[in-house]
Image (cartoon, rainbow, N blue to C red; front, side):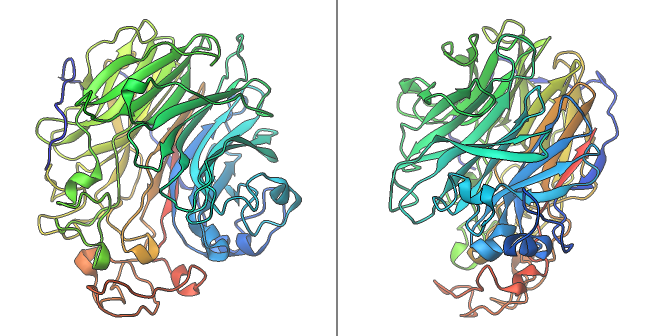
Length: 558
């Protein structure tokens, strides 16, 4: 494993406690995509896209969830939903709603997908402008309005990714409108121009001065690769009808900044955390915290939370440094098979203070979830500590929320992997074979301000991040984050799950390549894994509906 930064946390503590008894989770499948009629338009009725989504058994990943603070039986979720690609040839933002705390769900897509001929879809600013959408993020305000942030982009047409926010009223039941927050610059290439990406949104649910404000932040990438990427921020003071002109919140000396996360404290203070990456001026990767005391008009100077050792998937690829590895043209020098993953940070704020979590490697190479707590609004922090003292397995993609004095952190965990080694990605043996469905979603909770934690497994079945669910690319894709929502009286979490995926021999090479192939009864040519190119079925081919791409979103109420 290649080391890229010194691990320089103030104090490394291994904290395990019994601060709060683990509440048994009630698990449910969110995306029911194997039942005719399960998807309906947001405004009612159906169309070719809804019909295809209902039985397509395609991929859903990057889940989000939000609980209505006015009625905890109302829960909404979202994802990158690839069911839309069957008709539209591209992914779209999925919208799912439950009226019984997350036990059962009604399914839809955010209006505006290319084939959407409904009045709401045609009126959306994304309709006819961009063909793909995703990166969902959601939050209720205190009046029953649901705000759904997402990006919309084209992979080859001349408009790059923009940031949009859809509003649903009546506790998320009725779609109202979608508003453009920031458009990307025109470009003929996916990797050029200004690309808005990796967004996060939250609403003020307090009854204070800034009640019902909506805040959205994201990364603006210059050609996706430039070193001067920045975090931008905008706010709405009219319940999502319009948004302020975006402004840059990260200082120039921070260079590339990404993976922003937002939270609102009980007094209406806005907190934002993000990562920066090693550069010539600063050799470490770092976690930072910003604070706004005026409802998002301005932010304080960044507080340094931690310098970290990144846990990014490219370190497992070999010399090429590819972020995801599969087989055929997508095989990596290391011989491992995995989808991409990255370090990220998240923030929650409550009466006990501000709590920042992130994923980072120990000196041993094991990746852990860490927490630092501040009781003075992020000016100073207590010691950094891991959530537990488990010495095997990687932990990644943490998200945190707080309600009624209890902090809840969801994360992926591979501690049950019999082939675990810190120098290889989760779910791989030393020879690059599939070591089983060894990745589970776990939740840690604390009732003493983040000092001690107890844990539980919330996924009753394991997953593996090596299943090659990205269609013709022959690699996996499992998204870039998990999500937790907490309000007084309820906590809900969501994750990406592979339990319904159908494994089997890959028809492109006649074998279950390294045990990570997924069964697709399709015709591929040429039939040679070493061929530089091959022809695969189109997204509309029903052979892809047999379960070989069947990722799903699962959720649980704690």
